[in-house]
Length: 115
Length: 115
Image (cartoon, rainbow over all chains, first blue to last red):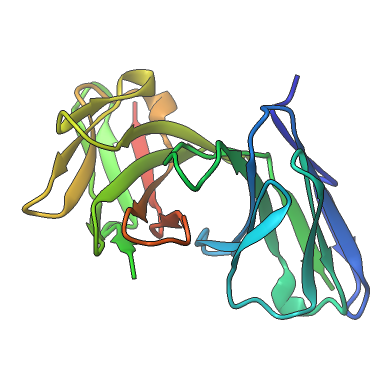
């Protein structure tokens, strides 16, 4: 049973389209994250939610909008896709970030290719 | 703001030899330090962490890391490398003085273990 699962695993789309990536964790964690890994493998945090509340919001274009319907789910919606959005997007979760520096558990990644 | 540096893009080592993957960090408060491994087309997997206490931390797959406060380093080590250890390794840091709970990753070091 996968701990952190993301769908879809691969996404190929045209510039200007809107797409969503979904993430679910069954670890009972309170905190979830979105990271972007570029072609050079550099990992950058985008967003984090703690129990459905946004706690980290990095300098990301407002075309990116996270949504957390409950603490087990964190989705990422991207509007008006651009070539530079092509990357692998990783979802992760951890115990409550506010009081425990616990490790992150990552999903397998969603590879987005914008043509 | 916290930062982490991995000075080597790639480390090459022969199977059976010891390996070291370097990491240095910069924080305002106390560091929480982590090592993760990424195999091709997979998400990151947690290896080990330093929060407090003993400077030598043991983790998964025979890896260990040594926290050195004076040198602000947290190098990853293994006494005897395996070909299957070949992967991308990330060091990460969270600053106890930061309220944002961000985990910042280094740029990654590719480990290549030759038979």
